[in-house]
Image (cartoon, rainbow, N blue to C red):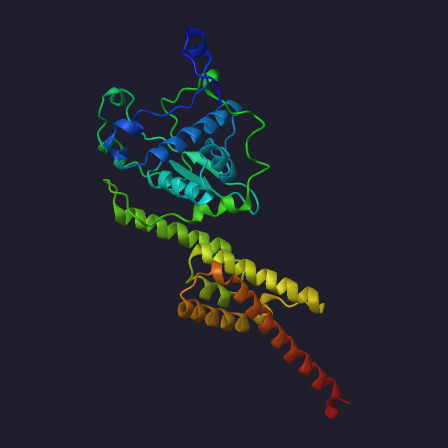
Length: 312
């Protein structure tokens, strides 16, 4: 345990700290925001300022940064599910947006700042009207007006600690899990709901676009998180079967059969009142059993063709 002592003047000048904007506490727009989310915002802002120093910008000159769920868990002492929940809260308050770069690559995070008059910000109570029409959505646009570069003393982030290497693949999942629960403020729930639906449709399209059309149509009825799990099981099951039998079935070759498996799988979920996560093993077994049956039927047909006397 560290020793605690009174501050002296020299120590104050060299102390490291995180920045928390006063508007998070003074403006009525953020009154419903949890203190935990505000603390996370301070950590993200610290990492964001490292990007400013290193000029990490996208093609639109917007500043982005990387901060994995794994490292946020270490900083805040929370489980990953809690980290994802706090990130969603920041997204809902238009303080954060995430951009998926590619498969197995960490998300780009964009910190969003309310767009308001600098002079007005000096008052004790900022009016809600200065924030409520500032819908950032997920465009990744960051307003940097009036933003100052941090004092070098205030930033505790090392250049080599940017989470590029150690980011977990599942960090990309939380960006798809945006809450539909409205926040009790002056934002229009209808607008937020439409934006959420639009984002979900875009993400579903991205995940499903490489699959055959019948599979796309049926899987689109599932939630985005469920689709990711089911798709992963489908691809693993197909690969495992092809390796075991030295064959090369594509999903297009067994599209109808796989859709039938998924329909039975959905019925089983309803009957047992279980989640897709809990029934992954059952789905894998069902897919392999269907491929076995399909392959056996195919081989019988091939043998019949070879032994057909009319072919001799």
